[in-house]
Image 1 (cartoon, helix red, strand yellow):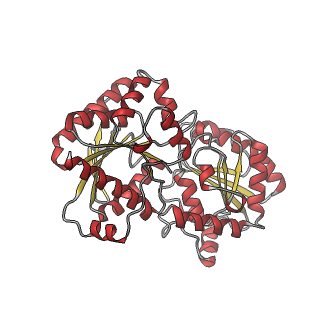
Image 2 (cartoon, helix red, strand yellow):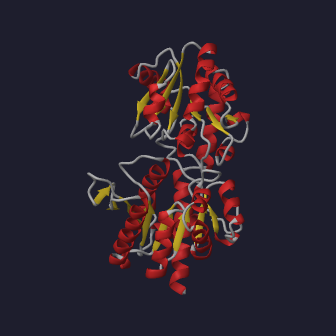
Image 3 (cartoon, helix red, strand yellow):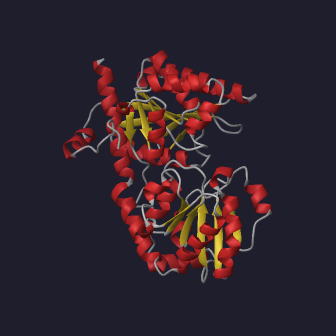
Length: 401
């Protein structure tokens, strides 16, 4: 944990937040939002209600798409979508200008701007700080060769943008050691690095009862099968091709094994066309809890991750998990007792880990250990406590400036 890491508020602080008369307005700037479903979007959507209970009113500013209204309200949260056609540069510029105009028009309702990733959202947030004089928080979503910092550096004026962000952002929210170390190397002072992990609703994502699980498996046509499930975007960085290469080996060892791939993305048509036996693409799912409760193990063969929401949800559901040893995965699965870690792009190791997870000898004990860790360290309420504490500290500091 960094020198500037947030610590959970005590009982008195939580009571004070619950009884406050003043509320904070947080403008969340994010590339995409509902109905687009991804880890960052799901995390933000899940946090809006617990933040509201802590005196935090959230407005989401995101990119629009054809067919979507420019304004919407989802579960009590206002959504403002900006849509500009043209090429990539024009869309990014249009998003930034539209977001700034919206925030300027609602200046009195915006106390803090919180950007989700180091690209257009972070640039927009820093410009809002200059124009509106509001504190800025930036959450870095991914680390590694395909992560936020690597993508930013490779783009136009990337190094200049990173230099400005390192000096103007008030707090960087980090979700893994990998991301924190990358920011330190980029010149961000440790005092502005705040460790706030992603959180999961452990009351919703929980193991099903024996009867409920049997009913779900019957309903989904999974009775008598050993089911591995992937939930996420079907994109190159998720390593689905490696998983499909590993699956025939799993099937030879376990003829009743079935792989379910839930999600959508640019690679889905190509991978679906070459899909192997007993591996099924089931498309996007709005709520994956029933699929997780019915499965026997979860698999995440990614090449890059921040702190995977899908992995956290699977752990909270009590599933044994197989994941690659990258990013935040190594902080979620710390040893054999909590799951299996394999090298990225190693189909043989991935196949063997899946065989071990599906055979069932240690499924219950590994799943219980995974859930215990999720409940203890990664609950949604704890994340909301840490995040609201950061907002109130920044708002108090800003009011004294």
